Image: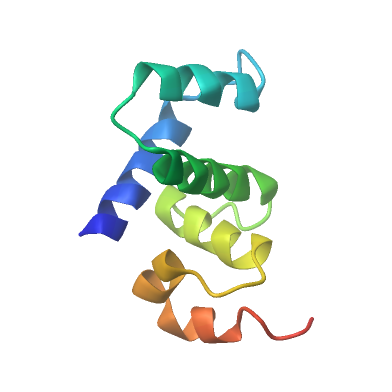
Length: 98
């Protein structure tokens, strides 16, 4: 349930961001407006959102949730709880050398 909510929040952030200002500045104001999120939540959500945008135009056919998970897998080199929840087989392979 916790991980579903984190993924839902990351999707909501991506849907709300329209690109009028740089992402880091927009996230700062978003988190200022949503004070219920703690520092760990802000760090994780920022990481998920940046992973989504780092994919660029790769795998455009995936829906937002799948792109977030794919970005998490490709942008991290250590196993992650959220990845273990959604894709346990990917989480086992995350530390393998390229």
